[in-house]
Image: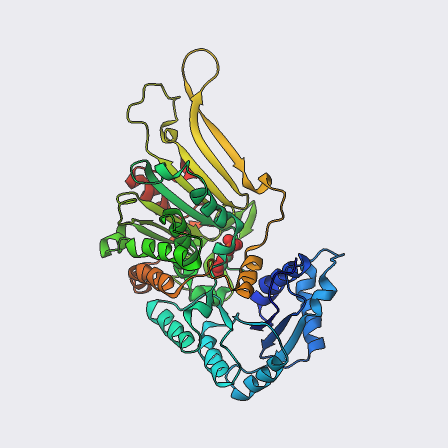
Length: 485
Ligand code: BG6
């Protein structure tokens, strides 16, 4: 397969954790799958002074252990990689970069896997360096700002150099096979569409749960928190895909226009909503799969009196004809009992029940569509069937479609797909500026209230499903999280 363009992939932050854990392995996987043009080069740039040989040896040490011992493409992949030490603030460094790029052919992709504070100087210096950027693409890693004002500032700085259709804002959730399958489920099947609305759906739950804690990222995480790290981007993007109208085509802007309409239809959070419809939690010590783990405040890099949230649950509403009055419950947290992402669509109960329900099934009476995104990928339709035998009693039955086993084709990791899309120039799975800013705008009342609150977040033991107020949030609305049904 060789339908991809020749390229030079300039990886700023090339020695960083993200590059070594995600980006280089994703490019390696694309290389092994024969998806990269033979004239595809990877130029890693970072501050550390070293030559190519030293850099390659650090790639061997840091990326190598993630590979199978007999990895076929490894040596030929390393041949694609070069290294250039630069100071992101120094104009002369960009002259060296320009010289390197002079011999390079094909599409130029600048991937900024650096702190966002560097986006502005990097873009400005690239523009001043004389490097031809007319056909270039720039890929931006999150976090893109810490609130609406700072994200606008970054976007303005990047926009002074690159047009919007050259800017690829990564939300790696959009690159997940399972998330795209959600679009396929909605827009390739007529079965669900008539039911996909307020008349049939009682409420929707979206959960992204992690077992991991802050994993050596304490300093970053303590300034960020779950609302900025997960809700503003991944959870709101998932909500958009669940709630958007069918786009007129799968073109990038057709899809992004519809997601934007959802974000703009989100009911703004009033001060009362912030109090009553949002929960923030922070994990204390506890156990994950039987292993004792420390509480958040005891993790390295965390302030002793930190009020940063590691858990968020909140209720959103969408003010449009399809969804008015349907609560969307969003939750995410670190140090929860299992790593899991799923969407639960609960349908309204039958208007008049004529068949007796088994005792204890009160919470199960509605049909549910459970879309599991990770670790396994499946669609389950929870229905009621008849208990075999005498009498006419109901029991829950599940139609289970294991999507990850339904096809034998190899599945691509999120980063691999997104990097290939950036090289190919396909923007559909990247976040447009207006979407990103609409998402910041919606979370801002929560950010402000929590940043200025004198109340600490509610504590929860590591290995549990968050603070009790998360259960109460649903209970008050007459619902329950799946593990509490
Ligand atoms: C990242 C967050 O965007 O997503 C991390 O910064 C989080 O804190 C990660 O762990 C979760 O991604 P995934 O793909 O493992 O669900």
